[in-house]
Amino acid sequence: MGSVFRQKGKGKSSNWMIQYYANGKAIIESSRTKDHKVAKGILAAKEAAIANGEPIVRTAGSHAYTFEDATAAIVND
Image (cartoon, rainbow, N blue to C red; front, side, top):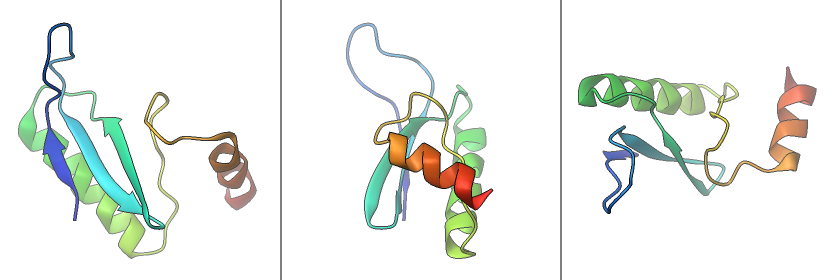
């Protein structure tokens, strides 16, 4: 199960962040929206894709996005 949250602190974005798990790894990325309901919908879509065994598309700048992830995304496309 994932979560929707805002980062705290001066200079942080007002966009909602989402956190979810894929292949045992926590993934944190911006939802790129200020609307909480939209962010929850994005999270639900990512969790559904994971549950159905579909590849997930992470936004550039999301944490834990590695070269290996990019290579795997190309190979699995």
